[in-house]
Length: 369
Image 1 (cartoon, rainbow, N blue to C red):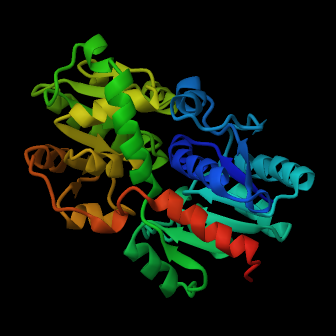
Image 2 (cartoon, rainbow, N blue to C red):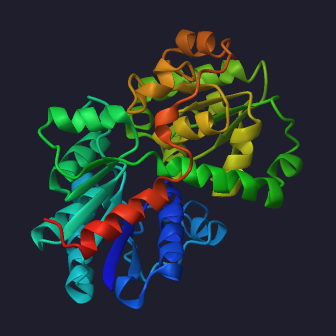
Image 3 (cartoon, helix red, strand yellow):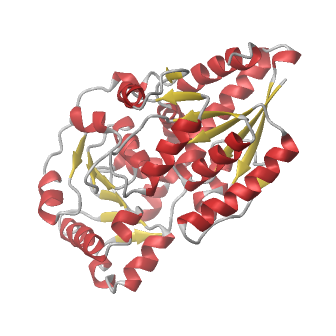
């Protein structure tokens, strides 16, 4: 039996982990006893709001985490350091054969650092992404994690090329995107079990959906003011729905920008399936989230990215996504473009998770270096 420790801590990681955990369960149904995979899930606690963590495990039927470190808040260095210490303690206790980390958060880096210092193999799912902006903490996290990892699962061909340019070519796999796997599952569940549009009185294609949480926007008063001004102007056309990240609310109040949110339909963070339902029926999605950019594509909704760059450049190249940054005029101009783009075949067909588990199973049981 191979023991795998999965480390998650933030909303996108819960979503990505769901189909992989399901693939492990499916693998074990047909594997012989000595080829079983035992998954242990560790939740760092980075997202501490119930609607942004616990509910994902319930909605997507992810096995409950055996460990919840409860670590959140503080500076990037403080958070990462505390995670590193506590993750190391779990690794010493569990002695896994492999650690799986996802994406680019502080949880990702802490898990990779802890495992690498103990010579435990690391699988990085969603490897190779680059925004080329090292002012973003996420960019530092993903670069360091990639260079520490034993096997790297890339969602796009560009991600494979990015790693090649950095000298990483061994055990680099184009797997497709596990987010697509999760989106297919979630879309079906949301249709069957969700009623947020009814309870909020929203009509399909008659509202804009926005998300805003990245530090580059929320911690910069000028950028935050500009983005909120654009959303305020858009609200004169259609309702602007804004599920608000707790940290974003604090910054809006700290900068005295409440007046710019008066016309917005703000709500507390919603569950994953509620978010999927809102995404599927929006006229346009405006976001600074990498995951939501792709979710917009998965559900066939035009997207405006409130950043100056994106890791998901193929969404821009195929016409699904427009980079508008924080410029009011660019955001308003982009909102006039409602056309859909062309298909992005490299994301796969919804089988990335099964491919990942198949490859991990072969490499781990064959003990490949």
